[in-house]
Length: 352
Length: 267
Image (tube, rainbow over all chains, first blue to last red; front, side, top):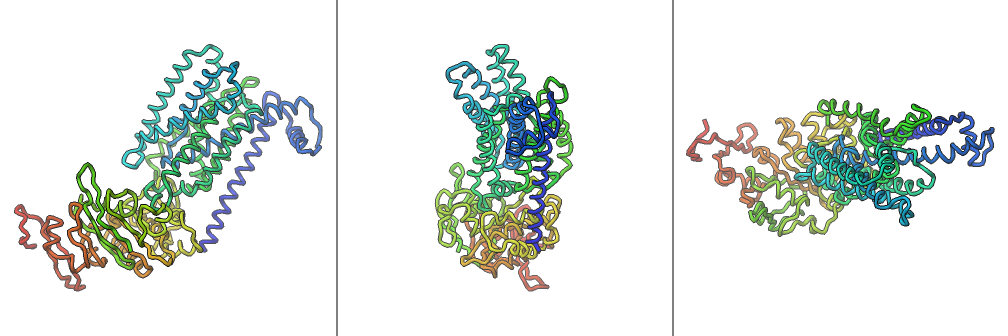
């Protein structure tokens, strides 16, 4: 009977994920079609199918160029960054055993941003070291994120338990410090750098090009897969670190793995698309509210929903003020902040 | 056999657990009793492998605990801490399944059903853990811990429980301890920290009395339960009375008068 039950549960999880995948495809197609330069939907399909060798209908070369050279890498980037932020947020919430944890809130993003800015200033576009940038920037951002998340983790832990209040306070302090240091670095930057930083800090997928995709793909997908492989351990950690150890989990090793993967994903995301807030907070929550807390569903679900949400936000950002673009961070914050407030209001009432 | 030999643990030169030796055989319930601050919890953590003792050794079936990896240790012993908080909305079924996380078993579904039945929690399966009452939570946690060592194995397993009855009413206390007695026949040894002397007298096979980090007395229940030694350990007048209904032993703690003479008789 339980076997049957387990089967239906796995089936239900798979069905849910399949549903998310389907929605993602729809959003991606919409995202490819709409924008300042609108491509009719049949043409979009024709261009995509043409790429895999199926002739179906006609389209203009200009349409094909916009879609394949500008929109497609951008949509891919939104999938990777949004999905990455979702899954990293879910994993960090699980590890800290706290539903309030968000990469931005606990300083991963600001640490990554600080190191990214430092890297930008140290390695100007025109320097002889510029070749190192495609891989150096994300790795630098990763180190910054990792330092901050380790610092917050150590600060918030007392007597083997992470206390929610101390965690948030530690995040605030670390964020303030990173923000001040970013300001210090920018003080020495010129006007054009300042302007591009402002846009970048609010989140910007406009810089996504095909050349950035391979690095991003590897550095986000690989740690995401590693996180997925640890979903059972995350479930055990939800009972507490001692309990997880009692059940045979090598807690220190798992925690280190989670922190490194989380910091890597967020670091790469921040270096590619700037600080995009709230995706890592809102997405895992929605999944938990809708489908329960089992990380075997929460992690992949958060990736897919994060990808959907960021693509959707990017679509809005592109069409709302045509021909200009709204920074995507504004859109995600507009969705995320009210949700966060709702969360704080309901936290005391709920079972957490 | 679970054997602790001369286990010693100091914090800032002050011994918390001082040269404690005892052993637990499979099929036995050993109750560890002692006043607050006697070092019970520290000793418990050393036994479970959470902290390392400064010197002395813990052997599970002849294997040194230091040499066992987390998942190897999990195959021979399960631990039930005093309180376990679950911060996310897991269902009872999911919580119990977690007990199997590091072991490969042939029929996980059957094992889970058996422990749910044993702990009388099968009807709660679909419910969210955090919505349960205190007694239900404790029984679900017990199910989670049991499933880890439930499967019949060629070697004995051990269950360590830290005050499993502390927040429960009388009926729930007895329900939990009754479950423990079932385990005896499954080649499992049980070590349980208790506060309630009468529960220990009723359910345990052996008792270890701990005071100031030292074993004051260790042996079969009837050897250990003596007025003198109990009064010494708990620093309080204690009387042993025959239960007129069951014929068993009743431990009665009298109200302490100011001179704290043990001869003070209960009204």
